[in-house]
Amino acid sequence: MKNTAIYPGTFDPITYGHIDVIKKGINLFEKLIVAVSDIGIKNHLFSTDERIALVKNSLYKDMQISSKQVQVIKFSSLTTTLCKKYNSNIILRGLRAVSDFEYEFQLAGMNRKLNEKIETIFLMSDVDNQVISSRLVKEIASLNGNLKKFITKSVIKEIKKKV
Image (cartoon, rainbow, N blue to C red; front, side):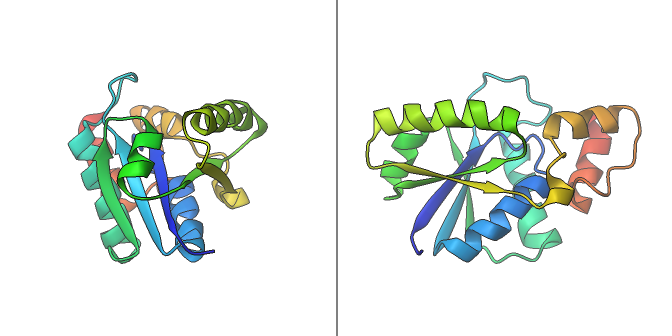
């Protein structure tokens, strides 16, 4: 299966769970666009520009993933609008647990209603990474816990400055 897929999210911060989905995505698609949301609905620890830098450093520097395989962008539109802009009909989403599926199922349905050509593909991260969430990473960081199993060196350095 070759095409361009869009992997949207807040990535506040990017975790090994996200990176696992990205690695699987680059094996399935010619091009993967990691789209960092600039919509201010959530209360983010990192600004959009900081999150983009964290994603780029984690992928390109820490994980040695080529920028030819993965493009990182900022977006503040509907994901379906973003798909149209990048000529993609695939939205990539990660799943960890059944609780994720309910929300993601609704989201996929709404995206399909907005554009019937859009397909959402769900990938599960490896078992070791399924329990990781950005919210829990921030909580562990705030309590001075060990973050090495959850996020890359670049993210650890920056999150320690914030909390």
